Image 1: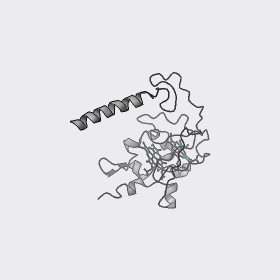
Image 2: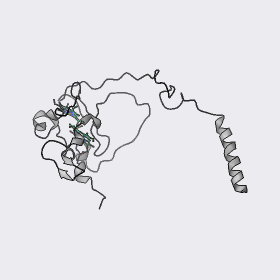
Image 3: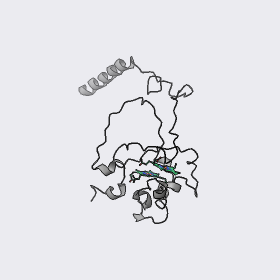
Image 4: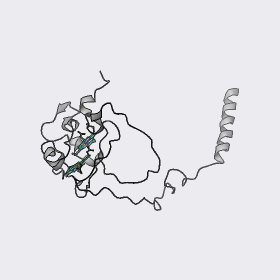
Length: 171
Ligand code: HEC
Ligand code: HEC
């Protein structure tokens, strides 16, 4: 009982100590505006790469089997519908080589839920390409990051093989 009282008293004192230094909501986060009103949020000016597919230079991948970022202009290419997907006009395995593009990897032609290869087209879960692959803008990051990926072999620096290794470490 005595211990309990000391604990309660302690926490009351602590909350006084911290209460005095309350942090205003404009000081939380990196945008420095009130959390419940975004009107004054100022975005940095940004511009995605505007080089046409075939003329851009691929980005370094973030880590082994990370989804690669899109280096080329995506203007007009991201209006996916149930039947149309402009990305596949160049990245589907049937045409990629002729278009000078990388084909979608095996993981995109595999139904993970039913553990079945897909021979016709790609998995529905991969249809919305920009859900995972995003274009990039040259901006100074607000928070530095010195993460450096380690690749297990040279090839994985610019090629992916997630489907082959997905069960690694799983019995
Ligand atoms: C007209 C053909 C074409 C279309 C359409 C196209 N791409 Fe590309 N894509 C390329 C080429 C070619 C490259 C290689 C870089 C270059 O030469 O510009 C590339 C590179 C990429 C890369 C980088 C691959 C790597 O190794 O880092 C990604 C990711 C990508 N495209 C995704 C997409 C997505 C998503 C779409 C649809 C929004 C799309 N592409 C539409 C031709 C195309
Ligand atoms: C659910 C997330 C997701 C979606 C949706 C998705 N991708 Fe990927 N993509 C990945 C990941 C993760 C990788 C790298 C690992 C892997 O799967 O092998 C990748 C790899 C790639 C690569 C590199 C292939 C290589 O050999 O290195 C290309 C090209 C690509 N995707 C194109 C596309 C296109 C085009 C679409 C839409 C039709 C698409 N992706 C949809 C997550 C996604």
